[in-house]
Image 1 (cartoon, one colour):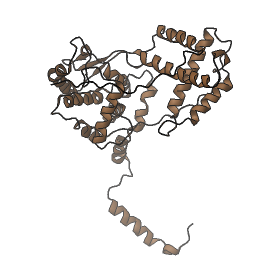
Image 2: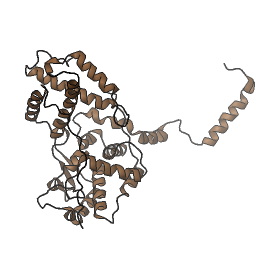
Image 3: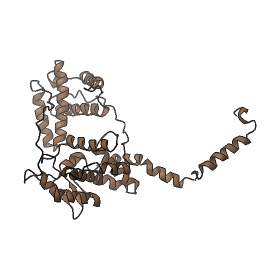
Image 4: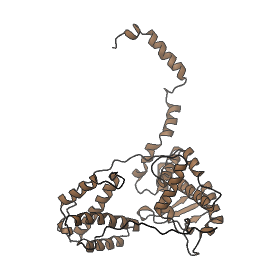
Length: 350
């Protein structure tokens, strides 16, 4: 099989240029301090991007030093984020706005701790509490329809089916899957080892029999065809023989969902939600699901008790003493009651 030729990216989003400002030297020291605290590369990249966004906004208004920033200025920036519109005309989501503000607050907290500032102008900045939203959960039937989308007549289709199965079987995050290495998988034991997941935590997960079967098929027949560098130990390789990028894998899964008629927002994370909810509905204890998902706080897992409405409906229908035995009989009884009422329809309500 010929490996696809990689196309040159025509566009890559550039960082906000702040090297000419007085903020830049402080940002470099901040990044170094966060590295020493063992923050992940993705967290460091996101925080720097958020801080650059804020500094760029300050630069446009002639604010050149962290010492020039006051609480009213930060509140103006917060207001700017609220009214900002993206290229598609949509506002920033509350989650995005909170991320931007939180990164700036952390930056100023560090500046104050290191005595670069006499006081922290962001210490009293109010960040609205986010209302937790219930995740969208795919049905088992939707999951099975999704699994049928990859073209199994191609090597890429077998790989994609294995990826979907691993997502649904283990509930791992997209960033965790793209970083899996060959030595993280044990097919004889049917286990998968996540190294430095969210929060830098490791965890050992079981792989279901069906997912393990597809994974074995991929490893035995497909991966060697995609491999361009014998030293590359990445488990899942893209069409160019390289590790997947988070966003590209998400786009691929989203395309399969669209073809399966699934219109719910999201892609890879929907399989994580489905795994947790379906296991809970089939009797798994919450603490086991918490371990599978890698949640440090059980309250993050409790949300799945609120989305298992299908199982709750089944239990309610079977156990509630007022369950409906015969809808027709009930309607007839209600009609008879109406006929027995004195005065009929013209009787005034009491």
